[in-house]
Image: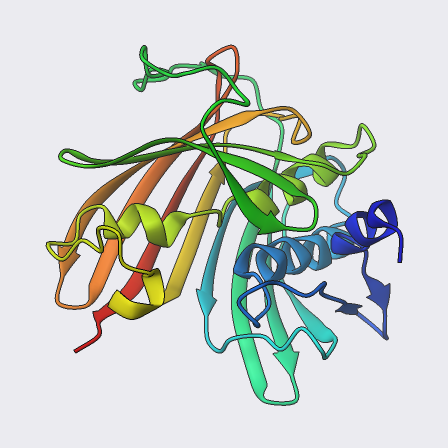
Length: 267
């Protein structure tokens, strides 16, 4: 299958009955479905069910339940929890034959005039997009590590969606959701007291994403370079939390992301 077609299929869902959709996954090097794909497709399923005039996603919260099998389609079942004049709420359960693999809630708001104030700033020492170590991540995603530090713990990644997107804001929000799971566990591990040094990842850690949240602040162009500035907040037991801000090249804050990950050190 041509690369461009594979990229287009990432965000494409087929309707299978009332408020039910099916999505496919490309193969990824680690043998499971990339978490960002399931989040993006679940969000798309929720978007397809929102028919209230001009409601746009402003946040999502998701729990990873089981690793997805890329050899099997994913079924997305949408529950219309609320249709209001200002807000609409959806719940989406992603299922395979093994059971539920993801549970996502998303909230949509009709635009309202108000202030635009940000208390976070674009880092002043960032190298330009396209610089840094390339990440071989997968279909539809180009990413480079801009900064990786354990003292202080910090992780920054430039990323962009490589497929062509229409101008509809929903398409770009879904593509941003697809990007948002890139290297979040790596960012969590920058705060872990056991660092792998030159050893292979799988020699040192067993890891998994537990839950994921996003807040969408303004429209975005997901095919343009975006900086994910990720900061570990807490590591306790085997769970670590990372929170990050997503900026455009010009320094505009477009989203905030948070993820909790499980990290066990192999003995």
